[in-house]
Amino acid sequence: AMHAVAVLALSSAAPASSVQRMATLLVDNGSRRAASTLALRQTARSLSLLLGTDVEPVSLRWSDGVPAEKLGGDPARTLGPALRALAARGIDSVAIVPLFLGPSDGLRTALEAARQ
Image (cartoon, rainbow, N blue to C red; front, side):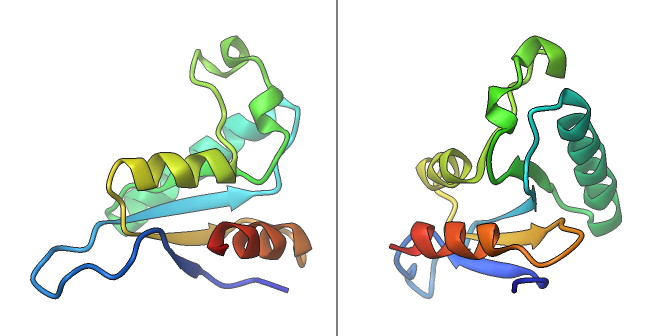
C-alpha cells in the first residue's frame, strides 16, 4: 500500500543545465459529493501555506462528475487528466501526496497506469 509521497516523472530527463519544473498534488480517493471536493481544496490551500508552494487538489475518480456550479464554478479534477494537463504545461515531475485514511490500491494502480 502507498502511504508516502510518490514522485512521478512526466517527461524524459531534462539536460543538466535546464531547470526542472515540479508540481505537488494532494490526491484523495474522490467523491460525488461537492462537500468532499471543497474540503480537499481547503486542505490543499492549508498545505500550500505550510509548505510555501502550490499544492493542487486532485481526486482519483468520481469528483469530476460533480457539477462545477456546486464547486464555485471550478470543476473538480481527477488524476489522469491532471497529469496530462501538467505535462502539457511543461511540468517535468509531480510529487503526489496521498490523502487516504487507509491503504489505497486505487492510487497504486493509477500511478502504475500513468507510468506506462
